[in-house]
Amino acid sequence: MTTGDADPQHEDELHPTNTLDDTVHQRVRLGILTIAREADRVDFGFLKAQLAVTDGNLSRHVKVLEDSGLISVEKGYAGRRPRTWVLLTSQGAQALERELRALRELVQRLDNSPPRPPAADA
Image (cartoon, rainbow, N blue to C red; front, side, top):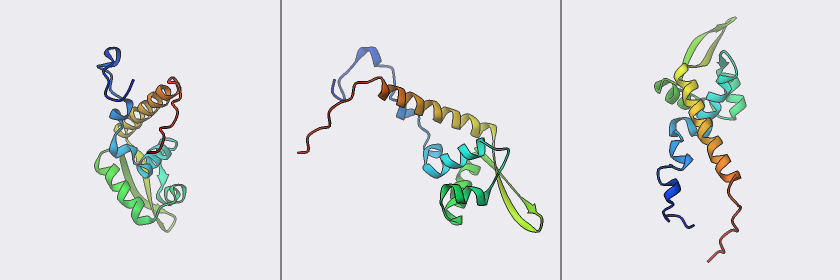
């Protein structure tokens, strides 16, 4: 079957990539959410090191997730040093689970389809 050919058996079924969330799916934001899911709260510096990003880049992605309600941010001190912690919200946990479900469906779909030979370059 070529792309665009109708398959009545799968007519109502959307491709798994249609359910990916652009806010969640971006590499750094997906990393923030998955790391935050593994801990009660995660330190900004730890995220920066784990995701290999700059302060500014991480701050921008944290802001997007916070504005979307997927994480909350706590500011405080550890001793005399100011700290910023990221916490996954229940809405964020649900969004991450939906994203992981879509990725699992995509992998399963590919695992269950026979490999196709690559197209010859024109």
